[in-house]
Image (cartoon, rainbow, N blue to C red; front, side, top):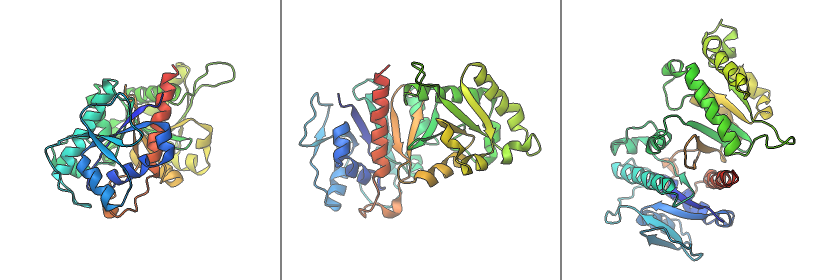
Length: 339
């Protein structure tokens, strides 16, 4: 059965609606899943007309039992509020619509009315104007799902990078890293590799997931000469995982590890902070990167790019990352069904 994928609108002044419409027009996506747009039909109609897209959208109030091949359903939010669309502009209203779309999609997932969700990019500035008090969508979804500990994972082809910390200033990163925190997140990554990516030793021909852990400091601390976090926090966490039978190696110096392509030997890389993990991933797959939230009871992916206000409404936004996000959501849903 094709899974139903709820796709949120994101910030309607950014490229979210455009890459969403381009993605669902792709035959490869229509063959994989049943897309359900969550947002304002006025916004989608605006961009479809502006960009001369041939697509038939239909406003719905409830999820159909049978999806038509003739139109794309739009779960229309705030139907009595016609949004003021201004591509490239920060807007409180755009933040309000973006936030509500996420809440509705998450609720549909929790009720198992849809099988998974893909979130288009939002502007944190617009969301903050609308009263959003989370660092990002990942943290918001963790709260909506009553999940205390999740891991942001970025995926580009076979490269999977999990983050120990997410949207934090660098001066706060070291304080947020603890043995307990690392062990929790490494456990989530291991479980996700098994359940969501189907990397598990079901028989003698398969194998256990392999995770590489990067150090926090340059040269992974150089045995305490450039910081002690590796010796007193990261190494004990790795040893704890090994005692549980989970293959976890490191800590590795991040530059050498990526530069020598050592990442190819592992199923996932565990980075200590945002840019440490995302810079190499985006260099290897900038247009196809996907953001996945491991540890949620629901399936959520997102394209690994922002609102790109500077090109919004111009018809030149690349939908590749959104297409990959939808494909990954479908893959994870099928892998979970195998359990």
